[in-house]
Image (cartoon, rainbow, N blue to C red; front, side, top):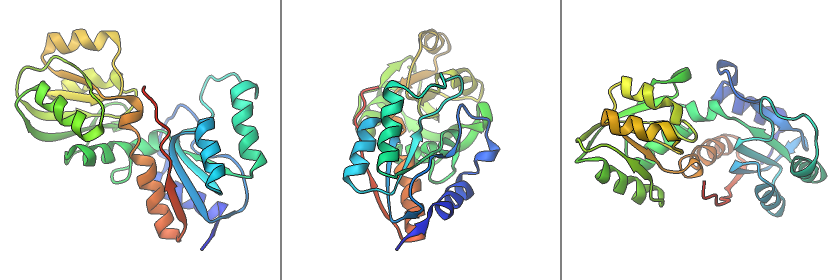
Length: 248
């Protein structure tokens, strides 16, 4: 089966509602390719490696969380950006990218799907644009939670603070270390995200709330295949998730 580019865009927009978000770049169709879609490749980031893998897979469209264009970018199409766009245009592949809307979707988004991976049944309750999630849990301390995260994601998290029992776990995928204070104010015993910056280590030690940095890529590799897979199922399209490993 196949669908049109516009119908596919309408399905993505209908699920993700990008108009609801103030974001760091454009959501939706970022590079226009062929009009008929049969095969979608999903991935985390529109890197050259993913684009080349999608070409090999004979994809008509790529669906990612991290697209090509961001607020404040230099507008010139040169170097690495030119090469990524050249490959997409040369092979007539559509690029769809959704940033905060994909983080936020209550079922197929990054935060919802990270909760599934961690076995946490939570909901969005705090933070900028209500992106932070919270769930009840039962872990003896941050070390026990860290072992659980490592087992679930296949990566050892950076863990700071948290000697007390972990009863309320907050999380927000990717580079959401700036949400830590909001998680503390919301009553979390621990906060899980992708990255840690210098201030969060001090806050964790001073407040007793654990901070776990489990990797930007590692925490955001679940939403894109979940949502693209759901849309492909609805439209009768082929879908394949391609993992491009990233240590960050």
